[in-house]
Length: 145
Image (cartoon, rainbow, N blue to C red; front, side, top):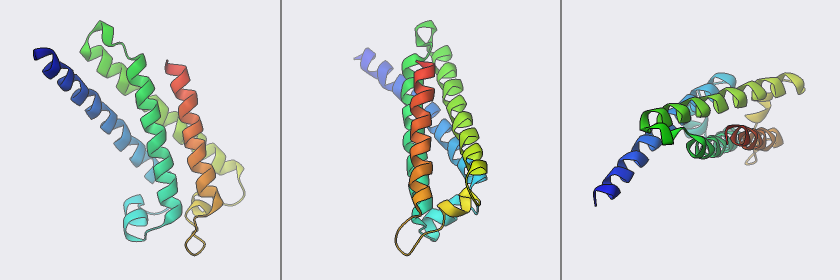
């Protein structure tokens, strides 16, 4: 029974680390997109922003998954949590950097295009940017594993 409680405690700690990385990812995405992301998604109900945020959230989840698997947990829970945090934050940095570079290479301002809903449909750039986040997550996940 004690093993179950210990495993549940470890899961909670890794979940907290994952939540921290997701929060940092949300802040990073908010910094590189026009407007306040919370307002754009939840108040304005912008579909492009929602697609982008969903893609990034899935991507960060993939990075956290691989970060936990690659963590240094065999050397203790503290090092396992720290390595997961650092791997996860590295993923956020790489995803944000690539998003900025892609934004510089595309015509116009990518952030504005992503948020340009056409009636009830998100701009195709939103799907491309979301897929870019997911693709980057697979690259980062492979790098840390």
